[in-house]
Image (cartoon, rainbow over all chains, first blue to last red):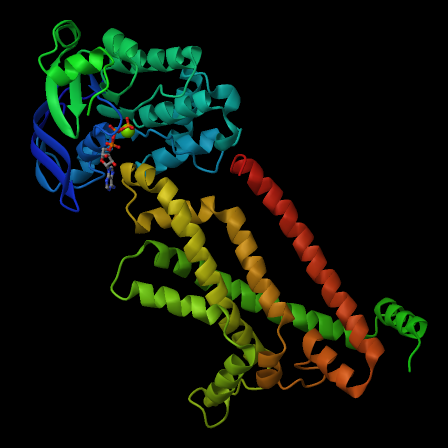
Length: 242
Length: 236
Ligand SMILES: Nc1ncnc2c1ncn2[C@@H]1O[C@H](COP(=O)(O)OP(=O)(O)OP(=O)(O)O)[C@@H](O)[C@H]1O
Ligand SMILES: [Mg+2]
C-alpha cells in the first residue's frame, strides 16, 4: 500500500505570475484534495497549462504560495509528484529506455528499474512495443507511454496537461481507463481538458479558468448544473466571449 | 608533359605495390588526425553541452568567440602554436616542436571550436524540447547533460565528422609546427603540397586518391549512422 501520510491537500494562495507587466495567472485560493479527480477547464489561453506548471514547480510564481500539508524537503516533494505534458516528451530511445531513464533519474537502482519498467509496460499494454524507438509510436501510443512512464514513478500527485487532446475516441477511451486505474490506486489526479464529456464523467472537482484567473472551483455536479459565474455559463453553452 | 595514362598507372602501382613510404605517410596522418579529433571530442562535447546549459555572465561573448574560432585560419593557429612550442617560447622546454605531438596539438586546437560550437547548438535545441520533462524528473540543468548528450548522439556524430574533415584536410598548421620531416612528420596533405611543388605528380596524386577514398569511406559510414538515427528520432 502507498504511504498514507500524504502531502495533500495542496493549498495555493494568492498565486500570481506576471511577465512584462502582464498578469498571466491569478489564483486567489485553490485546494487540491487528497485522492480526488481534479479537472481544470477553460478556453484556450486561459492559463490551464501555466497553473499546472506552477503547481508542479516548473515555473516559479511572481508572488503567492504553494503549500503542502505535511512539510517536506523540496526534493521529496518533487519525487512524490509527476507531470505529463500537453505535447508528450519522447526521449530518442526505446520505449523501455524511456521508463528506465525516468526511474534512474528518480534514484531507482538498476535491476529494480528494469523490473518496474517491465511491470508497467505489461500493465498498460506497451509490452509488445518495449524495443521500439519511442518516437515512431503513434500519437495515442506516445500519450499512453507518457502517462505510464509518469505512473511508474509511483507519484502521489499526477498532473496531466490535455491527456486526450488530438486522440481518436478509442485512444481517448484507453487513456481514460488508465486514469481510472491510477485513481483506484490512490493517485491524486489534476488534469486539464477541452473535453466536457470527459470532465463530466471523470471529475470530482472542477477548476474553471478564464483570462488567467481561477474564477470558479466547485464540485462537478454543481459546476455543470448551476455554474456560479457568467463566464462559466457562457463556456458551457459554447458561447464565444473574451 | 606527363601522359594521363602514365600518371594513372604509376598512381595504381604506388597504391598497389605499397611502398613502405606511402603506408608510413598514411598511417601517420591517420594517427595524428584521429588522436587530435578524439581528444577534441573528449573535451569539446562536455564543454559544448555545458555552454548550452550553464548560465553565467559573459556567456554570449564566449559563444560568439567560439563561433568565430570555428573559422580561425589554420596558418595563424599554426604560427601561434609554433611560437608557444619554439625553444624560446613558454612551452619550449617540452621539446615538442617538429614532432607528431605538435601536429596533434595544432589539429586539436583547430577542431575543438568546431566541436564546442556545434555541440552547443545541438544540445541547446534538444534542451528546449526536453526541459520540462527533465526538470519534472528533478534532473537540474547540469544533471541533464548526460541525457542530452546521449539523445543527441546521432547529430553529434555529424559534429565529430565536421571536426574530422577540418583536421584531415588541413595543411597550413601542421606544416608549420610539424616541419614536414620525411618519415617523421610528413602527412598526406603536407606531402601532396611538397610533391606537387617538386613536380612528383604521381606520388601527389596517389596520396590524393587515398585521402579522398578515406574521406568517402568515413562519410559513407556517417550516412549509415544518420539513417539509424533517423529511425530513433521518428520522422525527422
Ligand atoms: N513563457 C510565457 N511567456 C509569456 N506568456 C506566456 C508564457 N507562457 C504562457 N503565456 C501566456 O499565458 C497565457 C496562458 O497560457 P496557457 O498555456 O496556460 O493557456 P492554456 O489554458 O493552457 O491554453 P490551451 O488550452 O491553448 O493549452 C497565454 O495567453 C499565453 O500566451
Ligand atoms: Mg495548455
